Length: 327
Ligand code: DGY
Image 1 (cartoon, rainbow, N blue to C red):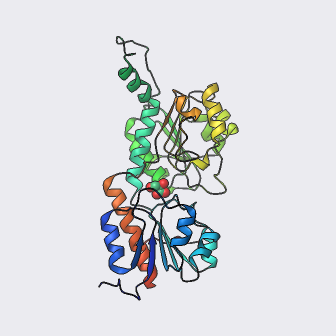
Image 2 (cartoon, rainbow, N blue to C red):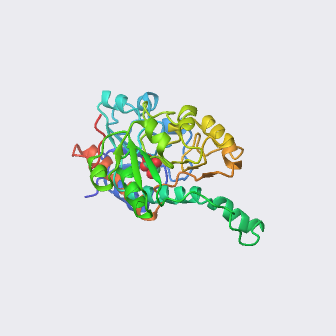
Image 3 (cartoon, rainbow, N blue to C red):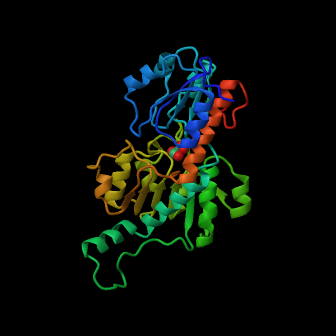
């Protein structure tokens, strides 16, 4: 049924999104669409959301008390097209009886796949290799040129053995990984299937050849990968981050890469995003940086947008949301 009449709920969609999700929203709501890839300015955002019942937002949108005030008392659903929700003040939403939806599960495979692509690009030095081919630095075949770290026989430390961390470990297992260590919340399936060992974070740092960050950004994980952590890692360690830039102390990471405290880093997330092109991370040959594309497959982005739309609509109707954040 088409509800887009005068009494249909008013919603704001803060970016250009896949057609399927857009038409789903438009069929049920009075939708104010920001049909651009570039976000509205904060001022435009605050103006657009005045009086809305529901908000469809992205991880780039800071959903805080100021924004909720600007929306006003009708707002009852915030639906983010992301699994991460560190940009949403969930407590403030709960206080105002605003339901918050997110998109776990459907992006797990795509994000794990990209994490592995990034890990391999970093450990096998693809950035340097591609550059050498393109610049003509590629001479004859040399026995000791562009050698990296292999996964066969390696110890992999996963920080955050949740949906994505577990899938990363499962996908890496056939490469011949000898041991999986992990820290964060206990995961019985990973222990049974992969013999993953739940260890103290210091043990994970000191014994891992690869350290992969798959944890959510929370007050506990913010800046946890700092000078202290890098000092505890092997000099050859390959550090990979596909969660949020905020889990890393980036200055400390730069120093660790420059001084050889660790071997290399692969980052799909940085602080800030986009990363300024003069960041030292980009001139380091042992650092690969990608533009936050973990979930970027056509199917996954469409599924995320549709799930976020379904969360929004269900929440507005007072029905059970398919994926709601429980605070
Ligand atoms: C998320 O969903 O939180 C990712 O960062 C983008 O897919």
